[in-house]
Image (cartoon, rainbow, N blue to C red):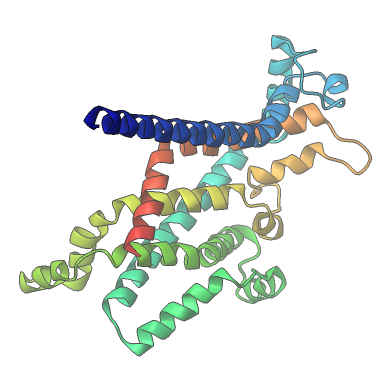
Length: 295
């Protein structure tokens, strides 16, 4: 009887393991198929960026027509005609300043709202989070910026930075709020008892604890601002202030487009964000999951 019971248990365990393996294989297969759906457009862009104009116009996913000379010609032409060096510099300035503003003030606002459990702070929280559902209306924004002379010259860059910061602020505030709820308030009390001022306590003690969610928020800010097209089109559309994303316009026309140059431009513009995302991917996932659990 004991041998029969043991064999039944082993048989049940084997069947259970087999079911788990089958489920895992099914999910992995689905994941691979979804990955191909996402990667195929990127491969199409990359492959056709290395072809001649005639071959690129066919928009085919094959290696026919690719040569080292053609690659050098396409990418060299894009860098020169699109003035990518200055465009990258403009994008870097706007992205860095906008991200710094959002991370600083969104984290501070989230800390105050979480720690002060009053009706006023609850109303402030609801008001800010409501920004997640409201679209950005560029016409009134542009009208407001024009009234304060922030649509021309260096003022346009400052105006674009403020608009970017305001548009991203609600989401960054939201994820900071969820993370800060998991930090004990006793840490604040101990710092204040030791004589630390509120600002010193926040930047020396609290902010370092926010490193996981800060990295996640930073990546979201960088990718959003760098890849944005609409705000740059309205506010940074002059030759000197154009951002990297807007350079794609140079190779598109109403009747004809230089697809090989357009694809090469897309590859170059996307490369910094792709590399940064691949390097920071584990921190992004960790920050989002920690914020979700603690929230």
